[in-house]
Image 1 (cartoon, chains in turn yellow, cyan):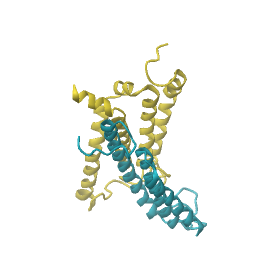
Image 2 (image 1 turned 120 degrees about the vertical axis):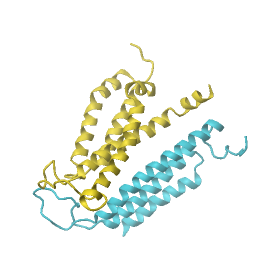
Image 3 (image 1 turned 135 degrees about the horizontal axis):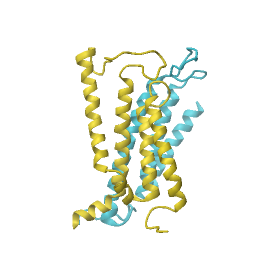
Image 4 (image 1 turned 90 degrees about the vertical axis):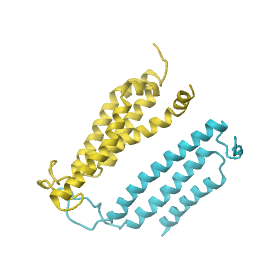
Length: 150
Length: 112
């Protein structure tokens, strides 16, 4: 068994199973942000921790091959623009910045409370990708510097 | 009253760490402890005994709630604390690259 980097086989196997459950739980927290405790920020942190789990178990070189960091960075950057776009749509349709412009729905339904679930999803994408990229950058800090010197 | 004093004691623990420790990582951790003490203080100000959380749930009777405003503020404060900690760690890594140590008494040469 090749053990080039990362933790032991037990940790890797457990991580392979549990990381999807952690991501699913984060998505659940984000989608139910307007009904229960939690929301975009809390769910985003949970998703970021799932990615960090993979990075700790498999090593920082694997995570660069597993996910496309540039794509995650694009998600993180564009989510701020989407937030702004929805807020400005509130000016043009609803009457004020971040104003609600779609149907409120029925109380305690999953599809309710207007634009708040949309904002939760956008904030979740922003927080999860931002937090993961911050820690990933700190992890490959000296590798980046060596690349510059060459 | 005693919980506020304990909260202040937590802040003092953080200040003690910042003032006496020589390791940069320990200083960053102490700054985190100070931040947690302040956050805890705000949440304790908002607390009312016998009140429920400020979220409407199906089947829950409308009753007295704790103040949700400090909780929203503290969520922002936690995010800012995260950003500050990440920046401090990045600066500490840069210093480690240059001086090969985290000991602040050995980081003395300002030039070169």
